[in-house]
Length: 420
Image 1 (cartoon, rainbow, N blue to C red):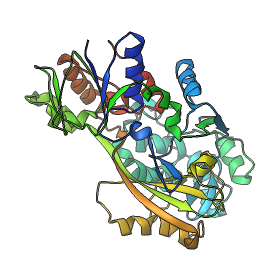
Image 2 (image 1 turned 90 degrees about the vertical axis):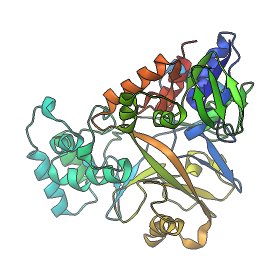
Image 3 (image 1 turned 180 degrees about the vertical axis):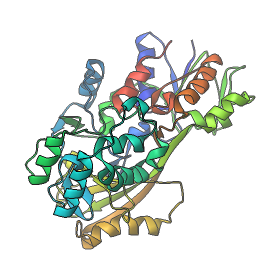
């Protein structure tokens, strides 16, 4: 049985493992020259950078068995995220860690928190309403609504709310007031422990899955003929298949397939996602903020989030050095490279967070698919698209195949559940 898997990211490699456990030998087509996809990494002059921030806090026994066996030595971190707001460092989540703010601003936030709109949650139709009900107007407008524009590339009112889950902490009145009086507050991040491989970057968690797997690199899919059951690639090759499993983002099928029904094309156009740049910084010093990652609410700084690869693991940087990576979510070519660097690295230098003389090099990379945007039509539209693909023999997996807010372990499990 000829099994073809499109994409050698964590979901595609999970699918390959599932196939091999059933005695099948799948072929994976991968457009990059390496495996890992969005959970992969790259190395420059001894500095390793993941593609955006990645940690594991999975509790799945199946995932943990794979991660532990593949990675070997694993480092464990207690989450210590922080925020930058008006150039002040504020413990994350900000809503119950208001202590660094001035008295007037704290009073406004607490006043609005105490006088939040009393609305039946079943009547809430968008994320902006949800934020105002949870936190009051002032905090909602100055913190998460600003961050939504930076991270989700849209206004909070454009998002629905089913995706939120435990991702946004909802403190009690007592927690808000106590956090305004003292910096000594408990960690309320949704994960209590973050795990990361000691060597090889995040993808070391699943690199073992690539070993012994037939992966054809630099083979970008250009067309899929579901009648003849053939996949064509940028190298001019044709791959016949009996079963096709794909982690390709759903919008891509508009160009890969012929004769797509109009209702499916309409549904594809309604699927929205963020794209983004990672701006990587290599430093010849270890003098950087001690936080694994931090969020930025200041809109004059382009980045929404920053993390330190060298704090995740010393193996990610040469001895005596450190590194940061900033994430900017925007359309491709929205800024020039000079504008990116001025609005990210330049802003950190202006704020005194890093020194210009310590910067060894910077690197700007682009990812066309970063996160699924949960606009109102998402659930109906993705079902229409996935049902159609299933009807023509394409099984879809992974974050962009399921078109969902999947963490890495969920993406792996998505691949492991292939129906072969």
